[in-house]
Image (cartoon, rainbow, N blue to C red; front, top):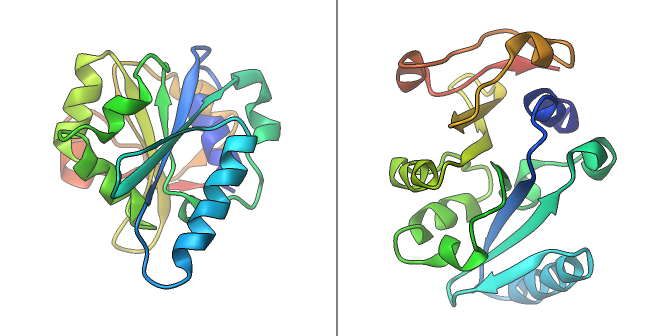
Length: 181
């Protein structure tokens, strides 16, 4: 289902994009070894890793024509707290500076996908857009895209069916898009 949602949001965008994922570097017990193994696997898959001590951030460029095959059908946001950043011109080290670390820590908490307003403002100043997953109060999963890029809703509708679409100031009130695959 996630692959269809991502394809719907990104189907009309032809710019380079980067997936950004974050994990806590320090874990109690045996979890730390599991994270080291995960990061080793990510490096082999071509991810760039930046460990700032308490948070580890990984980025990987996406080639849009290959997106359908690259995103597994059974992929879960909980597998790494991933956001998609449209246009990959931001350096990985910037994600772990003091201003952006709080958002990366939020993303490292599995299931918590809403970047802070400060993080979104930081992206806007770099002419970036971000796509992330969000569950509403009823447990419905949706995708939110915030940023400088315009979307053609008709084109997205060819890939998935929308239950609701919120845009402009109404997003401040609702802060999610409910989408059914």
